[in-house]
Structure formats: structure tokens, C-alpha cells
Length: 363
Image (cartoon, rainbow, N blue to C red; front, side, top):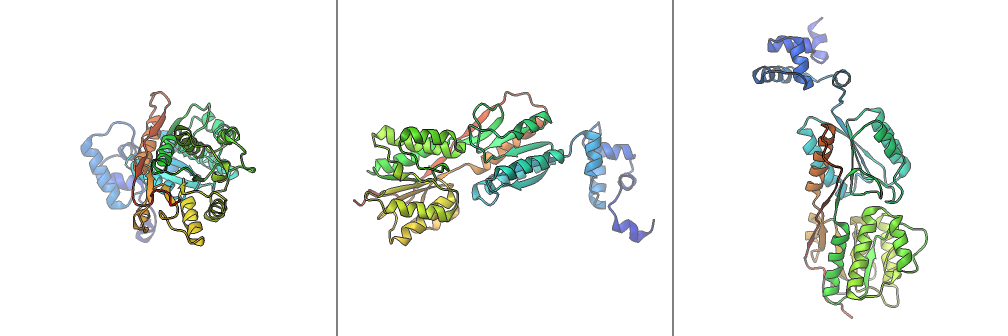
């Protein structure tokens, strides 16, 4: 082998063994993370591997250990600041345990979601995290494919009725109820809810709205339940014209809020339960020449630094993104390691952050 050829290829286990002064089997055990190796030998092998720039053959390793040291993450929208924040915490945690991460975004499309799960199963990932676009009462059939392959899976942000799987979510219902109650405490009775679950026809009453909740994403549905809880506790009559029925983009949110503002009795306060919904709401207010909180009080969901530099700063519901990502990682790693703790739904607390976007109604 020529020197040029050696420099153009990845170092081999034999070269690492020669540099560390140990046998090939010892290097394989050390780098593969199996068998017994003394601390001093492990340190020597790892130093040699780092100096030589050795990268393990993941295919060969998986054939030996049955693990690929790769995790799959399927997100509804990887560009969403919420998912981006959770993903960072998740990735930081699993990398400390030697895992690589494959991330696939589905754009809330069930066909893309099914394809993504198929890709991860074919790649023999050691575990999967899923934020599904399926409604809570219609779990996707490919979950059974994952189960049949004995691949550990953790659901995040969204859950399914009747599915016994580890889940990490926030207390969406209580977080929403608390936010709407802030409006009510300041005297508001006409409160808009921007981000109703997707539906083809507007609901005509509370009973119809609860039917829509059952067919929605669990996070959307729980936030709407919280809105209804707050109204009910305050004795405020529910008005379906104050709840949007839109897909998740800023333009449709803008149009929906413009429709609310055109009502004979428009809302004096608006709760926007997602980042794009909040942007669409602010854009609609500006198009009508209205301000917050002078004309319409406003609360958003998914707190971020940009909310603090708005004028005035926005009151927001803050989700514990780091905790969500870290706990999801810990749950998945525990399952991969054979943990036998009972399957659980982990519910984390969101926090209301009061700022300057809520005032008493102007009329």
C-alpha cells in the first residue's frame, strides 16, 4: 500500500490496534462498546483512534452488536420554532450517549409521514420519535409496523386515544384555560381563538365543536378544550364565530382574523395558539389599523425572544422546550436499553408569561 493511498482512505482497526499497542479484538470491543476492556486500555485505544481520524464502519458494527447507534425523528414541521427547540435538546442529549440522529419533516402530511417511518424502519434505526399529523382518534396503521419490528418509539407533542406508547406532551388544556382566564379577569367576554382544529365545515354549536376536537390533533384539541373550559367557568356563552377553522399558515390565519374583526360584535381579545397564527393575527390587526392592547388584547403560544422586542412586548404561553427534548431522549434511550418501566404519558407544565399585550376592553 502506498503512502498516498493510505492517506486517502479511512484508518483501519488494524492501524488503530498497532498505534495503541493492542490486538484488533480489543479495538473492536472498545469502539463497539461491548465486552470487557480496562479503563487504561480504553483510553489508549480512544486516543489512537482520535489521532488517526478513525471512523467506525456502522454497517459492520450493527451486524456485530445489533445496533446502528442511529435514532429517527419524524416531525410535522421541522421549520416550526417549537419543534426546532425540542429537536436541539433531544439531539444534544442523545449524542452524549453516542447516537446519531436522522430527522425527517412531513409538513403535516400523512403520506409523507408513512414514507418517513418506512425509511427509518428500512435503515434499522434503534428508536423513533414521532410527532404525528394524525388525529387523536385515528392512530396511523404504520405504528403497528414499528411495533412488529420491536423498535422503541416515543410520541411527542401529539398522542392517540387507546394507544399504549410512551408520550411526552405539555398540559395544553390547562395552559390554554389559564391564558383565556387572563383575558376574562381583565373584563373580556368576546374572546377569539385562532387555530381551531382543521375542519371542512364550521361548527354550529358546542356539541359540534367537541366532535371536531375528537377528530383533531391532540394538541390542538386540548387547547380548544381549555378555551371552552375558561368560558364555561366564567359563564360566557360560546360563540363559534370566534373560533377559526384554518390550515396552519399565516395567510389563512390573517384571513380568519380579518373575518372575526368584521363581525357586528368583534372580539376584544384574541388567543393565538401557534406562532404562525400569532403572526397572522398581528398582520390582520395592522391591516385594520388596530393596535394591541389598545383595541384588541392579545396572547400567543410558544414564547420566544422576538415576543419581548415587539412593541409592546407580547404576553405568551411558554413551553419547556429543553425539558421536552431531554425527557423524550431519556425515555427513548431507556427503552432501547431494555428498560421495563411502565409505559407512561409524561405531561410537562407550560408557563404563562405576562407582558404588556393585555388590557381592559376598549368598549
